[in-house]
Length: 131
Ligand code: C2G
Image (cartoon, rainbow, N blue to C red; front, side):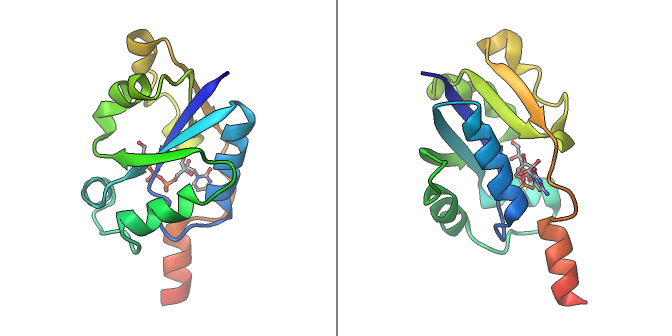
């Protein structure tokens, strides 16, 4: 059985989020998803997520293609999370290309970056509704 792991904020859940999770699950038989803590999101994006960690984790955890959700507290703890879940493959969108290759020698986990779904993003949704 191949075990997968991926990470994200998944704020204001949209089609691009669904597609990365579905495509990730096609590459493995079991999938754990690390959901950014509210504090990690603030440090990455300079704003609080619209939905709280608990709400984002409930939404992602309810999906058919997701087997387990957990809290991602820091980008630097990826190797620890990979070991905790015995992940064989880490998948991220290609906005992160190369950024997590450092886990390979530490974990022997395969790392794959998939193309982002064009056009849709949480930021674009917020701007469109605001404007
Ligand atoms: N994504 C995508 N297509 C989009 C938007 C997002 O494929 N149109 C992917 C991203 O590439 C990422 C995942 O969906 O793999 C989650 O995106 P975000 O919620 O923006 O997560 P991010 O803030 O990039 O957090 O440890 C890594 C970080 O926690 C990732």
